[in-house]
Length: 384
Image (cartoon, rainbow, N blue to C red; front, side, top):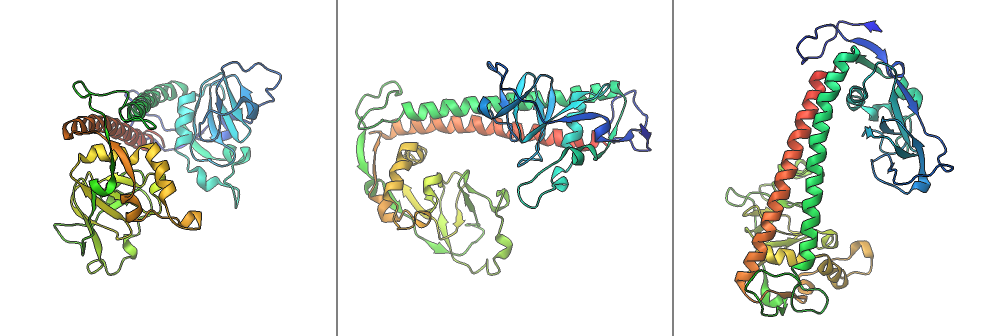
């Protein structure tokens, strides 16, 4: 080991020595797998570059815990592989050499900017040589173990929140199917106590009214954004495609006003889920969107228009000869129909149920992001 004068900013009590600079190849073995086809796979999981389970026929195998990192494609998302497992041939698995802790090595891999090691002008690629040649700072085995265990606890918390999000999402998906009529039925399979009347088939022209108020942004009606995943959000909360800096006449540009509980959709992307209730508040959005309001329960109606079966119906109502350029015009939307609960009270109970479900999922997502953020900060300060 080559002693350096570098130390991490945060350390556990009792450790003060400088860390040593090493080539990654001195502390790990980078492997590509072996032919598994003569072996019986059983229920052994198969991992790809993104951590996904794949068909055994596409895989290679290994028997010890390791760090997985993409050889091609997703090269910047290392993760732990728990033995036994199979791997696809586009995934390296990295085994610590003697006296090096697996979870500590995983931390080292998470701290490397692997995109800068990309050796291709096309599909991102890594080689064993590129991995082995990375300079890292490491410490004695006992400190590695303590640090590794600390971050293993983070990963366990992250996994628990991810599983809870998956569980709640599955429950929500199942209840969407059961609490709304299927096919030609006029009653759902599951209802709240006290409701027995059949649901009524209603034309949207009787339920929705288009809101088409053009105005500039103001303090009362600030600029808002609209995304496929989240619906109406503040512009600063957009994760991608932030193009506000390109708008040079924002103060005079014309927008569409929207109010809380409006139903908004993107005419071109509605079949991909770009239809939501405005759960944020009054504001202005791009005039490319279509906005409607209703005297029915808005969350209930959001469940109706975002239901997978209804999205399929929308695809049949879109206009245009070129598939990628087809749009859902307001008249076509208003010509559609759906079964709705006959009383506002039943609608409100259903709407509140799904509001609570969405709230629980959002809490879990916020906790997950908080833990990921703390882990990221600790990785930066507890490694050199």
